[in-house]
Amino acid sequence: MVRAFAVQEALLRWAKGLRVRILPALFDLGTLGYLWAAVSVSYSYFRFGRIQYSFFPWTTMLWAIVPVAALWSAWDQTVGLKVVHHELRGGTAGQRLLYALAWPLFPLTLFTALFDPKGRSPAELLSGLTLSEVTLVVYRPWYRSLTGWLVALVLLSTLGAAVGITRVEPARLVSGFEKTIKFWRAIVSPRWDLLVLGLRLLGETLFMAIMATAFAVPFAVILSFLAARNLMRGPIARPIYTVLRMIGSFTRSVDAVIWAIIFAVWVGTGSFAGVLALLVHSIVDLMKLYAEQLEAIDPGPVEALTATGANRLQVIRYAIIPQIINPYISFTIYRWDINVRMATVVGMVGGGGIGFRLIQYLRGWAFQEATLLTLLIILMVWLLDWASARLREKLA
Image (cartoon, rainbow, N blue to C red; front, side, top):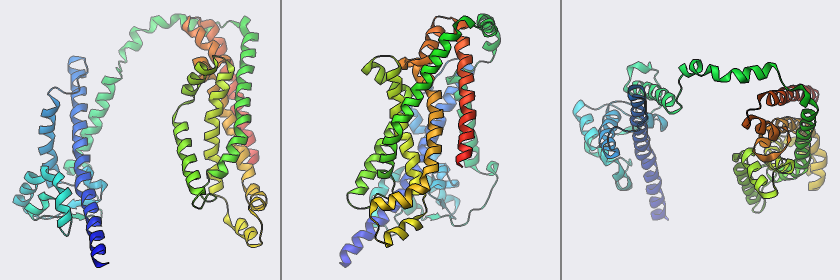
């Protein structure tokens, strides 16, 4: 038993040593590597007008940033050390120089942390210094530390790299303005003779959102009870909860436009593909909103009814549903409002409705026709946004 306890203590010390010694080192090397690339992009774009991520081979970059990271770690609290709330205290200049020279051996902490009682790295063992946990944070202006200047350089180089990569050239707003004259003329002279067609397409888009929301609600309500952490306890319920949450996170991460493309290939272009795309996204989104509301209910009524001998269905009916009915309705209205906006977007990739016709007009440079549809979309979104806000206020 004593030996098992000693082994466990050694493993915990080893894990802590890795977290404090290896994680900051990798983080700092990554920061300096990113700075190398960002500075290269910024300089190459503003100096030569082209994008170049490194002026030297990447192996040269590695040989350059390792000594910089070593000196940074020896003389200042690096970004990585700030993450783990540790710093290198005290020591003479010679000890810190020795620490910097031995710092590249940090991967050997995998072995030294197993045998050293403090889980120290080779650099600490050779220099006699030890990383200590920061218990009192002393505020210093950023310009009084090497880390502050490096972070400022990272931010500036990131901004410069972003300008170069995205090709931000304000002068083109002036030089290319004459190309938009046809567009501006179309805005002030839309094709009003297409108003009936536009209203019909608008109605189709509106009903796409209604169908998707209406079909999503019953599925989301049922799944929300299975995705609520406070309701799903036990060896069988908890895995179901975990799987549902994982599926929901994955499905939400795929944009509705991607789902529209998938269903357009599956069932063909048109409103049905748009409804299916909105339906999938609405189910997982409402499931999450509903489940979070369930997790926030007052447990008092649930415990009181359970104490009287009520079964699970009775507890849900009389203790849970009264607490969630208004928030559920509010979330549903909010989701319907979102679906109305998204129905236009998914229509542009084959999901039907007014968005499908709008993208056809834009591709054909039919700006007068596109302007009319755009004005109708703006009017619909504004009216529905106003109406849904009033309804949610009533339910609050």
